[in-house]
Structures are given as structure tokens and as C-alpha cells.
Image 1: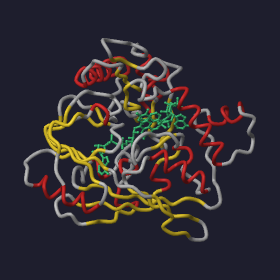
Image 2: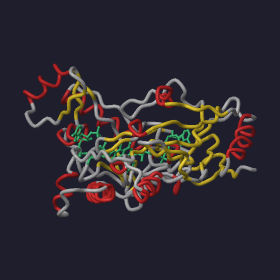
Image 3: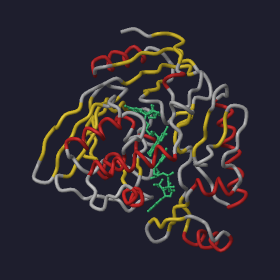
Image 4: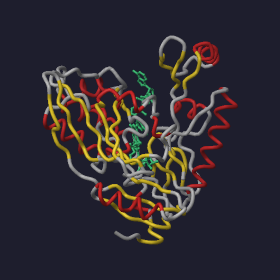
Length: 338
Ligand code: FAD
Ligand code: NAP
């Protein structure tokens, strides 16, 4: 296996940033991954394991080694009375895994239809949408330890999943390459349609007793109507996380801003809709030279072409500053910056 030098990444990141990797290779088996990691270790360069590039902002050329994950395969790994266990290789496209489960009737994953990217990145930030997170259907994952090449199985407790968080973004950052994920899906459906406007979308379609496919199709339709398609406009989805603030701070803000959007997290914290804060701070739809804030969803920063990742990053800094000034709330980025 050999590396390609100065490899263009423009088609491998959904922001469409025109940057290069100093060295690049793709792996389609665990053995190939091991071999590439051994070669990489001889260099003193940074390593980046790339899935679909849909949660990344490149602010400059990547001066290290990029390894593109092309591990493929989905299979039913087992079942018991109540659950199916589906194992997917890390290079599988997440949405294709969702549609595979919908087609087979493996229930629990349908609210997460159309999230871009690969299976192997899903545990990184415990992906979630419409009231379901990866952790809700997670059984285990396999990962290769970069330092030793050894395989380790991680159960739910090992992953320390939180809101857009996991151990792989913190204590074990850059220590493992995730090679497969096994999901635990229901035999007896327990649908969750209470989030966002799924119910309204189903009603508009004349569906009162939805099945898994109906819900997946409703989610797909809502997402297509609200979110920019990275194939048309560069973006990485929500650029910021929804901030959680103490109940007291929320109540005070609510007095000043009665329209404030917040959802309780436990008894003492409230999650604020970051998109609403950014919109109120005047950023929604703002366009600069080739980049800006999306016109329908202020949480999404967009790249129309010709801009750099550092310009988008600087915009994110300005947004953080202005939301802090107006509301006293700190926004944190969800997108990984390189
Ligand atoms: P990449 O961008 O390739 O990688 C992301 C990070 O994970 C990088 O640090 C990378 O090094 C690391 N990584 C990737 N694969 C591995 C691996 N196998 N082992 C170790 N590390 C790895 N996210 C949500 O949670 N919910 C949403 O609803 C959602 N909607 C989105 C909508 C749009 C239009 C877009 C563009 C993005 C959206 N996202 C959403 C963000 C993104 O889709 C997810 O974070 C997704 O899991 C990223 O997958 P990826 O393969 O593209 O990861
Ligand atoms: P939305 O439905 O307009 O809702 C705005 C925000 O309010 C969302 O971010 C969501 O938080 C929260 N929310 C809505 N209903 C809620 C409820 N019943 N209980 C608790 N919180 C609630 O949001 P949207 O932008 O169209 O996105 C819809 C879903 O897709 C959300 O779950 C969102 O996270 C997900 N999404 C994620 C990304 C990404 O890149 N991470 C991109 C697009 C969409 P949560 O975000 O915490 O769910």
C-alpha cells in the first residue's frame, strides 16, 4: 500500500474547501488499515481518519496523513426475543444503513434518516436527530488502537456518550480508529414522532398510523425542505451545538426575550436552540464573499464557493462573540476544525 502526495480534498469534505492532504491513502480492510498505520507511525505527522467529511472544516492544507475509510459490509449479527443486532462496517454510508434497516423492519433508527456521513463517525459525536441519538440503539463497536494495532470492543458505558459527545472526542481522542458499529434494533416497534414537526408532516400526508418507512420518509422530506444539500451548497450541518444553561439563567433570559426557545434537560438545565439565538443576533441569511449563514437555518454556515475555511472559521468566531454579547450565552462548535 502506498500514499498519494498532495492529494486534493475538495470532493472529500462537504464544505467543499479546496485544500490538499500532504499524504493520502484509502483502506478497504482492517489489514490494510493496520499496514497504513504502521507506515504512518514512521512519520511524525498528524493523522486524520476520514469518513464522509461532513463534520469537518478544513482551514488550511492538512500537513499530515489522511486515511479514507472504505470498510464495507452490513449484516445481521444476531437476534434475541426482542431485538435484532445489526453490524455495519465503519465505511458504510449512514443513510444507507438506515434504509437497509427500514427495508428489513429493524426498528429504532428511522428518525436518523438522511444524516450525512459514514457509520464509523456516528459514535464520534453520538449523532442524533428528531429525538433519537446513536446511544439509544447502540450495542457495541470495534475499534483499532492506533498505537498497538489491537482491536478493542467498546460497550455503551465505555463510549461515554453525551449530547454530541463521546469518549472519542475527549479522553480517547486520536487513539482509536472505529472499524464497525453494532446496533440494537427493536422487533416490536416503539415509534417516536413527538419531536419537531414529524407529526405535522405525517398529517399532511394523511398518515395517522405510521410505520417505520412513513416516519423515515417524513424525516427525509422535512430535512430536504430545511437543510442545504451539500451537493449544492457547501456546509457541515449545524456548526454549533445547542447550548445548555442553568434554569435560573433561562428564566431570566425568557423575561427579556419571551420568544426564547428552550427545552428542559433534567430539572436544572435548559437546552436553548442555538439557531434562534444566532437569528436574533442578526446573522440569519447574512452572505459575504462566497460564504455566510444559511437563509433557512441560522445554525448552518455555508460555503457557496471560492471562500476559505479560515474565513468561515472567523465568521463562527464573530457569531460566538455576538451571541455572548447579546444573551450572555457561550456557543461551542460542533464541527471539527482542522
Ligand atoms: P467526518 O466528517 O469524515 O469525520 C468527523 C470526525 O470523526 C473527524 O474528526 C474524523 O477524524 C472522525 N472519524 C471519522 N470516522 C472515524 C473512524 N472510523 N474512526 C475514528 N474517527 C473517525 N450530525 C448529527 O448528529 N445530526 C444531524 O442531524 C446531522 N445533520 C447534518 C446535516 C448536514 C446537511 C450535514 C452536512 C451534516 C450533518 N450532521 C449531523 C453532521 C454529520 O453528518 C455527522 O457528524 C456525521 O456523523 C459525520 O460523519 P462523516 O463520516 O462525514 O465524518
Ligand atoms: P428544529 O426542529 O427546528 O428544532 C430546533 C432545535 O430545538 C433543535 O436543534 C432541537 O434540538 C430542539 N428541539 C426541537 N424539538 C424538540 C423537542 N421536542 N425536545 C427537545 N428539543 C427539541 O431543528 P432542525 O434544525 O430542523 O433539526 C431537526 C433535527 O435534526 C434536530 O434534532 C437536529 O439536532 C438535527 N439536525 C442536526 C444537524 C447537525 O449537524 N448536528 C443538522 C441538521 C439537523 P436538538 O438539536 O438537540 O435535537
